[in-house]
Image (cartoon, helix red, strand yellow):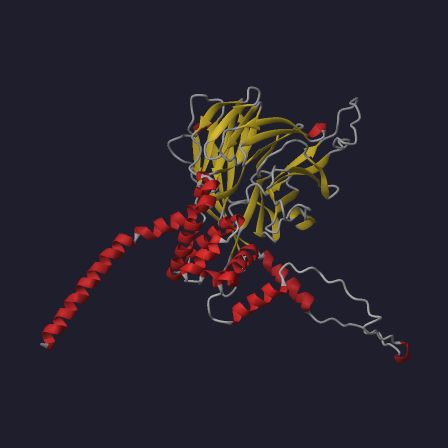
Length: 542
């Protein structure tokens, strides 16, 4: 499961709808009650400017006696659902669920880089943060205009929440800004990795918030009102890195759910009056979904997201594949540590429908009289409009010729193949490119690689390093050459981005290096035994 799902999926406030952006850039909205895909929308700007975050908002009825709003303002005469979408180019747009289209684009200077997170204050304001370190306040009631811009340091912001007149923003550290004075009034220790989500709540007239990082297994809890404390007042430990959390506070009980990247839901129940900083809270139970056993083998089905519903001890879970989801209300058994639910895999429904579509059908073919048949020739025939082809014919022929021979692809075609493989994520093309062992060919390829493909290349090499030793050797050659040839481009990304980009590679290297001393000692012993055997054989021959 991808680690970048935090801000591109969300339940509506009533839990009846679930919105997310798939890998192709499509906005999909599911009806959770009927398990139906209600809307599928492809924004005009999705190819050049992919959507990076979304937020459900609901515009309620206007009070009686208020002035009529002009056409440029939002239609607030009735309660309507909207999705606020942030893009990779810094734009913020408003999507109408009722009209199934983009209703307007937010007006103002906006962000100069990607919008990373959005926050709705349940009034008429939307707050956005971006990779340009800016926090922008937008007024929904005034034509979605920009009303305030706050420069929050120099680091890339990845999460935002607003409590009263205080903005909580995060990169690795978590900072609190006074929106009136636009000054930083407090800095929390934060996380070792990039913060991906901030959730706020109020209890006993105090403000609290929860935070997670996409590279950690800890949910941290902080108190906003205690000015002398910068460390978390409590923490919840999980089994794997977290992609989504949800919570509910009833009286003094905090009910927390965390979905990790392997698709397992973990649940916590904690009395807030007994929360201790010295001891992390452990999970109350696990919820895992598996498929029906075939030949005594059950496959795990990933849980994508969870919502704690208004019902007592009831959860709404989304599970399956991102292309085909299912939603179900479940009641976990708190007396059991492991809750395993057996369900049919949603993928099987798709496969069965495809098989049904391929079955032959009885087709009635009309008979034509021979004298009434009109034959078309080159003059009378209507030429079909040819669709434009993205890749030139010469390039396609060159790629076809590469696949037939067992030799390494020529250097002039390596860049084309690499870009094509990274763009389409074709395993066969990437395998052909990465198996190249010629250092000169690798260097010339990486020197001509466009900068926007550096990060996808590092991700693919990180996956390659997790395989057999031969693949690790190939990936090391490519990574070493990439660092040598693209040094200036990598340095321009900044230390935080580089840590996130190469974090998985460094972790794999450290893991393999842990066994190196033992392997060297074993090699030394084996060499010693081999030399002793050779000496004995020579003595016997003499």
